[in-house]
Image (cartoon, rainbow, N blue to C red; front, side, top):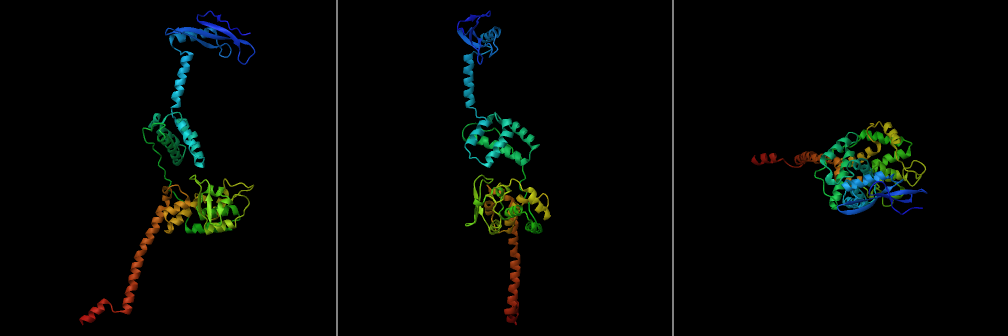
Length: 395
């Protein structure tokens, strides 16, 4: 039976009680220490015989450390822990800011991508720091380290996310701002893929000859609508309004559902396309495509298109480039058709529209000179010239 009677040890100020061992059907000693500090008598538990591997000698050393002030008493330690917890509760680290940021955002594909970037690249370096604790050298080192293994555009996304998290915290008055501006890598993302008229003709002939209905029609839809590869993969028949001629793009890159026109060429392509599942482009078993590169590349190869031209994304560029080159479509309309979030993303095609406007402007020369020639001819045929009239008058 447990004994609640104090048992002395050979060490002053150390005693024990007997109690039932935790998790075992036996007795163990529970050691206590008694000491004075700052004139106050303190009695506290030192530990259990089995659970804490406590002995009278260890208890005596703990008592000595308490007396010398090297260790806090249990009560003082609990008070210190409470103070630390309170301080931590008011400490808005990058991890806490990110969690709060996520809680206020709807679930989307872009948020999932950001979550992956945060977990892999931001949290290990900055997660436990408050924004005001981050110095510019820390960010510079991370940027240079990431640029050795990742593309500049990816590194730009990562650092832009860090900046966005901090700005969110500042805006919500949760933390102080960084003491510096985060330098983002320079990215040349204005590259466009295009085809000459001869290449496009060859590609259309190869598409027409192909017996792969899924590959050929998804290429035609990329060319006719400018839709992204992922948007075409996720496209369902219920998203196509054949009556009002619109296509609903669900969960696009920008995160908000959008509609684009179903033009005549796209409509004709879809009307003859087989309906084997709820997805317009399926790979069997009612499942959508996740990759179709090998199949569309066979058509691309048959047409003699360069390897670096991406069959689906490249045709999206061709769609936009042809509209811009026509000079008949303004940049805002192209932005809407491509479902770009901002006009800056569409500016890569602006030079094509500028060239079309230059060509239109240069027509004035032909119109002026051709018009002048016609005018002279009419004057010569129907009336005397001004010089003829002058000679007749003076004569």
